[in-house]
Length: 415
Image 1 (cartoon, one colour):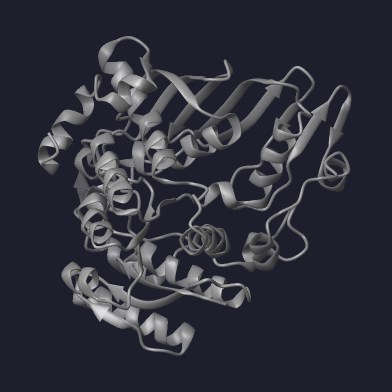
Image 2: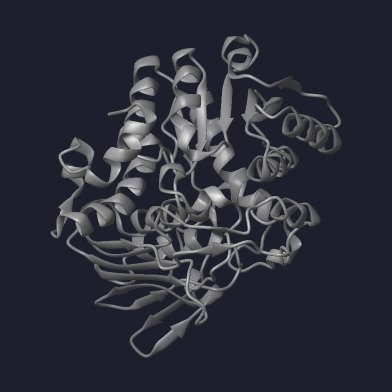
């Protein structure tokens, strides 16, 4: 099988997870990408990435500590951008101008203009630009979409997404609390705005507000359920920081279908967590279990509560993709996440989709535009809060409304 020679750019924590995912893809038997190179401005990170590729694949990749070497190397056809989100566009644009394809971690860019710069470069060069959104690849989310597509709910009129709970601790890294780096409200909640558009179609209008719930964040002493290296890294963090970016998003979305979405997200507060993802139609209600936990989808239809094979019996034409079947095996409706690396299988599916788009000249499932609209759904809520009125997707994409983003764009040289 033809494989695309790819360079991973960014070998930090998320970069390491991408390396595990490329191993999952290779082991699937239908791998279409070959990880031939790694790049990180930090030589220590680059060396860690190199050693991890050697350990998992038994081969030594090319190693770069600057972007120019990647851009000019004739044997690299594509890159996977896993850097600080604030520089995604600075990395991706010159790569695409050189004719190389790009898979970019979410959020695609930290402003709409950054996203548009990337989309414009892809269109001008005729290359593939894909946004790495792995939650929608989860088999329960695939099944939920199948239920909606087959009309088992009737026409959906309401979706509820509620993801609440957190603490006053620094979450993963200090930059995830800073507006100009893509704070938690964007960096994490953009996963969920992508799920909303995956379930419910195109956005039309936004209303709500963003909020900094925790005004001070404190260093964690240890990393629960994490590698020892995480605990060591936390020791290098400051004792406390004052966030400049939102850790909560509260919004109402009107979709182009006419359906409404109630959306709440917070990684803050110490009162415990709460989760709900449900879709409501005249004929029934779908309850999704969350993401990457392997739990079952529940479908309620007029006096019946259905799960697993009962749901599948109502979807005779529904099937998972070949790559999903390969990495998850036969039992995909539910699974035990303890058996897998955290999200390697989900990312292997998105990587395979990217490879197919490059090899076949097709559009990836989550292209640059969908990556941008997921970002717009977060910033649309923020902009609505500042404007004191609903804000439309058209206003967001045209730049007519961008008060929240002006400061970030200026810092990025995109004003």
